Image (cartoon, rainbow, N blue to C red; front, side, top):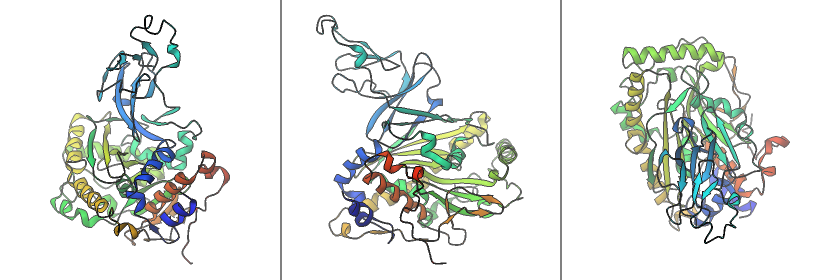
Length: 462
């Protein structure tokens, strides 16, 4: 696909229009696996899922099945879940503990550090000549443990994960720090929810990038009042007092929503459920303000680490990954987090709330899934594919170096407190998608290294 095809014909940022082809075209989907998922950093799991030597969790990186495990020495690895002999999965369990992974096809066995340690008929069939040191499990070339969250990439030329994040790390921290602002004091609650949606993976990815326009979809849930205090989907008092912002990082493709409370604003009561729960969160909010100072006024909202990792920092606190399973199918995986040190009553309360809100049984996410399903199906026809989607909200009104009440936020910001909605973050997702689809190397993708940050941005007239 030529540059004209991606940046003008398919992703036209000047007009704020995106072709439906990028959602429903099978050829484009195949190209994504090579040009995007084989090069980007992807979320694999959390260290709390593999606390002991021999523990493993079977995860995915794009279409590739992988094994996240801790070896006998306590080191963490991510391996391709495929035997080097004939490709059979060497691990067919979702999680567990084992000294070796044994292929059920021909019996090759691998230790938890990936080495090939067992070959049936090694002396008889191979005459002892097979070099087992060359046939270990395929391991990711880069792995990063960032505050307990484990990220990996297959590309040896990709920048480090810290460079990949850039200043977006402060926003990711809103999901990974404990509620009191401590560093990485969270754990996965229970297992991982998994389900399949008949839509392209980019529908949920853009939704969680900051689609603030679809609240009509959730009116019934708001009326039911599934939030902790029985009002709406979530406790909203702090949000009503705050500036509502969307934040994008053009040179990296990450984006999120945040709320910023005015300076000196007393901490609103959250989670008015029971004395134990309310007191816990009130104490945590006080500690967070003390630890983080002015940044403690920032409240996280849904966001996306490019390309397909959704963040929901609070109410509920989750990470979701939209695994591609073909141009017309997405497998959704959702992790739920709680503070390690939280009382059991708080963890039980959050479990109940998370179930009501998110996942295939969650009332809010059921609305979203219905939208993505029908939007995708209605875009597959010959006539439908002739007409692009509109992404024009707020175009040209983005602001760098945004400051509110003495707090300056990193990234390019849209203030939607009065405007109510913008598609600023969504355009950023597809800007970066087009760059990945066109670039031949990370030398082209790492635009921040050469100070090239214009990216075709159209600014509104002063």
